[in-house]
Image (cartoon, rainbow, N blue to C red; front, side, top):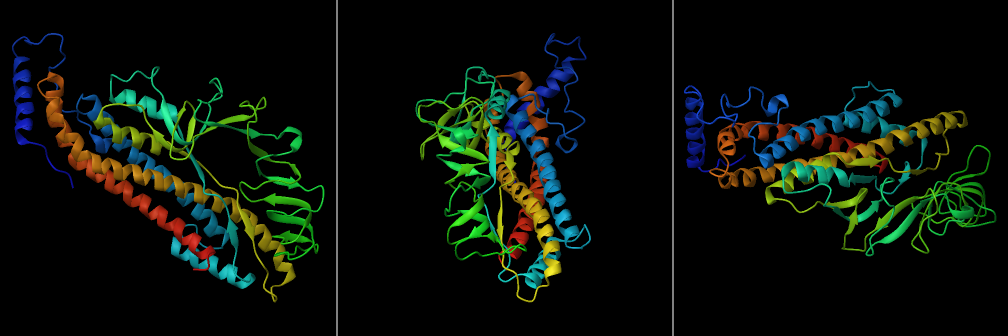
Length: 424
């Protein structure tokens, strides 16, 4: 999988190691260097130890590989937890496979509904803390001063509460919080209280003038209304509210300032980036560091990303022969499934991010090790650590392959559940 670098470099490192350790038996001709007994550590990457070579960029890379393996197991555990809960709700064994869950889910929907469940949602929101990228850059490159550099965000940056809550001149200032007087001039997440007859961009709970997709047990609309809705509206993600927004409103700050207590978001223009000192919802551009640090910094940022479960709008139409006494049970099941599927989508989104980090680390391994000859001869400790780094090549490949395999299975499992909802 990986290419071994020039054998003369290895020979040089081994020669220096032999010379130094031999000198330790003659009153240590290199006092103060700490080079005696500098053999490779007993514990390697397979044991979770990334302090292998003494070369900052190499050991930072090794730390990212170890972190990838741990993150892969953590993400897989999150996906498995949601799958177990869905399996049990379908009266399957908790250890049921994704294929078995898909079959049981399809059977449940076909028995009760016409056309299956219609699930609408915005993609899970995944954010990266700017501090993670800055700290990873400084760990890999000693020339990076964490207090003097910043991260750029291609997307939306949520300003850290401890920061000055401001955006640079190139970004649009967006606010998220309780709308002034409950009148939301942007998108409302949650419930919209309709004070008159209005079109509901979501699920109408109340009276519908025409074309309701789901009629509740009380005879009122509990689904999508093609006419006017009188009651409350559970909005689709990012929808506008023509009444009072009872949830969270995201709106553009009219004068560049948000209401007290509102979350401040700096939205970069399309195909551009803006300075970010908080969490970035989008692609992170780390501070400038050594080229050999790029992969490990990018991987650290993706592995520590946090993905928020999306709000789901679930609609359906009963089959004509589905018993009324079973409808309440089905609706209760749907509410539990809504939470589990939202969590599954978030876990799946994180799995894809971490899987991408693993692929980046695998591609970067060869280039990183090929750059090491430049370190030899400049720093004696680096020369001695080179053979130790080379000895860990097999473990690098093993850890990346193991983690990637686990994550690929998790992503496929999420796809199985989504396929069942789509009627596949």
